[in-house]
Structure formats: structure tokens, C-alpha cells
Image (cartoon, rainbow, N blue to C red; front, side, top):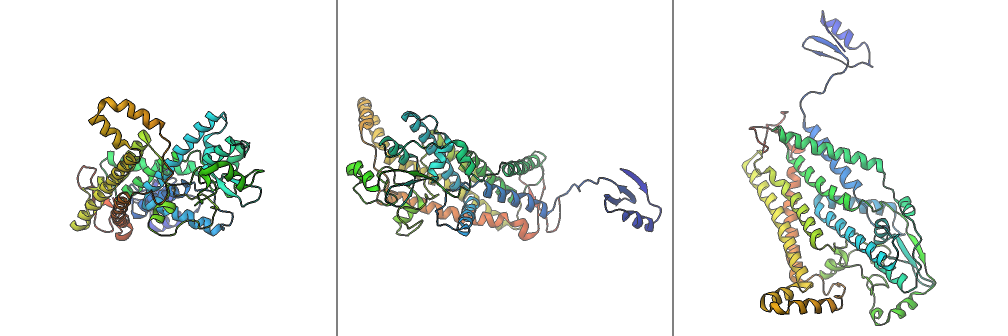
Amino acid sequence: MYLRLASNPSEICDKASFSVNQTSDLIGGKFINGWVHQPNTRGTLDILWDCLVTIFLCTWTVLCLNVPAPSDSQLTIIVRKLRWMAYAIIGPEFVLGAAAGQYKDAQRAVSAFKEMGYPKWTMRHAFFADMGGFMLCPRDSKPFPVNNKHIQWLVTHKFLEFPKVTEEDIWDKSKADRLVKYIVCLQICWLLVNVVARVIQNLAVTTMELGAVSIVFCSIATFFCWLHKPADVRTPICLATSSSTAEILLSAGPDAKAPYRMTPLDFVDNLGPSWSANIMAFAGIRSGPQERPLPRLTNDRFPHVRHFSQFLLIVITLFSDGIHLFGWRFDFPSRAERIVWRIASLQMFCTAAVFWGAELLAVLYRDDTWGLLRVIFTHPSQTKAFRKDRKEMPPPPQPTPETFPLPWECGASTTMWVLYLIARAYVLVEIAGPARHGRIMRQKRPSFFSGVTPRGKRD
């Protein structure tokens, strides 16, 4: 690189255009040839690019949806993924909850197979089974998907040999591109480092960046939950059995007498509770695949997460919603807009907290923990006998639209979700503020809680 003072304007023009392969500029009357650094400013397009690209890459690449039905077209598959991408933007906690539940179910399946004497059943096998990667092909009836519990029962009762499918066979079906995931990780790190660095340096942070960090935070947790789950698998693996469906049901005895709702193996696991099979059915609305037996396993099964895992899930979702509260003292174009932002941020956080509280109460009710607490406080000497009786009791029946959700649970959860979505809708609109108003936020005082400059200015 070299600097040279130009003698006259014509010389400047001639030298500035002498080569298209060299970077040149005129700064302070000096002609610069070589590398020219970016201006130490950023505009609306810079913020939009960093945030929107990161949100798109996160919400698209993190998704690992279940295996589609054989009759699903490419358009149907793309629309379904776009719909779940929208869920990941509007309610990232919902997608995280589904991923966390699938992760815990996979862990339980691996432990169950090890107890049966099959230590080669890995997390990848368990995820593949629960996403509908295996189809049972009876001798005289239509194939249908089976999950881990179904396979365990079929193997235990000698209707099926243990699947001789390796991890490599399963991962070969996955369309996950590791290079793309590494690029996404780099983009996420760039956004997070950029926001944290601006906070440390007392520089401005926009509402769009807050929203992007909130979505990215949940997406990172979702990514780790689905780390072993194959992505974009199109065709399942057929598990052939020489038995007919009727023979399998007859061998199950009275447990299999009731008509099935999802698959003939409902007496083993009825694939519930889920949004389409329980909540929508409770409301009298038809949702999900209507064909029976199910041609695919739906993606909306509720998480079965307990103890520390549930506590960790609650903390992550509340922190993700609480990120918007960091904009409490942001300067907005009007006082009313600032007040509505504060109300919406608080409403999102509080409704999420109340929702989890209602779910915890429902879990305590279903597990009869209230009965245990009553014995502990009223008859402490009978606590040990009560615990022993609980262990000897048969497992609770599987959830059906008649037993799940509880009426008060459905009312409380639905109310919280409606209030959450109203607040979330406003936050998403306000997050798009830089695009609507052509503005970015400027530091007005040395604090993380920064303000907004008049339209058209740059920081």
C-alpha cells in the first residue's frame, strides 16, 4: 500500500480508474492504492443482514422433523418444514420443548434396550425409531410406523428380530450437511460476540438484535437436543414380520381389545400426548393425518421431561423470554411504544412462568404427588408404607383425549398461550423497527440500555 498526494483533479480521475483489479480511494486529498478498511460505522442493512440471516440459518438448519409419509410430495414436505420454521421464530420454546422431550425419550429407550441385552442400540437408533424411521410390515396388512416402545414389545414377544441396522446405515439416510452446520455455528458466534462486545463497550444494541439473540439462544439448546437425530430422512426402513396384525393383537390379550386410534400397537404406546391427538381432539378439531393406521409419526408429541431436565428446560425458556426485558430502558420513537414494549416483554415472561406452573401442578396431580404430600404432613409415620404401595401400583393408563388434558389445565394453558402470542406478535413487529423506520439505536449514556437516533443516522 502507498500514499501519494494528487497534483490535480484530472490526475485523480485517471489514477482512480487505471485498474479494476486494485482497490483505490481518495481520502483527504490523498490517493490510496491497496486495502481499504470498512468504515467504523454500521447502518440498517448491516443489522438486518446479521440478524435475519442468523435467524433464518438457525431456524432452518436446526429442524430435524420426523420421516414423512410415503405419499407426501416434495411440496408438502417443504411447506411442513416452513411451518415449523415459523414455529421456531414465533414460539422457539415450543420447538425446544419438543426436542427436549424427544431427547429424554431416546435416553429412556437406550436404557431399556440395554436392560433387554441389546447394548448396540444407540441414541441415533432411538431417535431414528421415534421419528418414524422404522415401518412394521406385517404379513397381510398395511405397513405402519413403530417407535422404540413398539419395537421393544415386538422383540420381547418374538414377533420381530432385533433390527440389524448400524449407526452408519442410519446416518447415511440423513441429509444433514456438517459444513452448513459449522457455518451456522460461526454465524451464531459472530452475532453473540458482536452483541456482547457492544454491551461491554457501552455501545448501542437494537431490539432486532435482542430478538435474534432470544431465538438463537433457544435454537442452540434445540440443536444440542437433536445432535444425534438424523435430518431430512425421506424413506423409512421396513421391518418385516412373518406374523399378521391379527396374530399380534390376539397374543396381547385383553389389552389389545379396544379399537386403536393411531396404530394397531396403541396398547403398547398410543403416541400421546400430542397437540393433534389430544389438544385438538379435546377441542373437537380434526388435525394431523386422518389416515389409519398413521402413515407417519407426527412432530407435535408433548415432551415427557421430569426432574432436573424439566427444571433446566424451564430455566432456558424463561431466560430466552427474559432477554427482551433487557430493552426495558431503550429509547423508542414514542413513549407509548416504550410502554407497550415493556408490557409485552413482561407479559411474555409472566405467561411462560404461569404456563410452566400450571404444567407442574398437572404433573403433580397425575403422579398423585398431592396424596404423598398429604400423607407426609398429616400422617408422617405412614409415608414409607405409602411410597411402597405407590411402587407396587400398576402404571397409569396412557393419555387419551378423554383424560388428557385436564379441563382446568387446558383452560389455563390455552389462556397463557393466547396472551403469550399477543405479546410475541407485538415484539416481532417492534423487532422489525429498523426495517420499518430506517433507524438504528445510538448510545445516549454509558449504559447497556441505549436509545434510538433520529431516522437516517448511523452510529
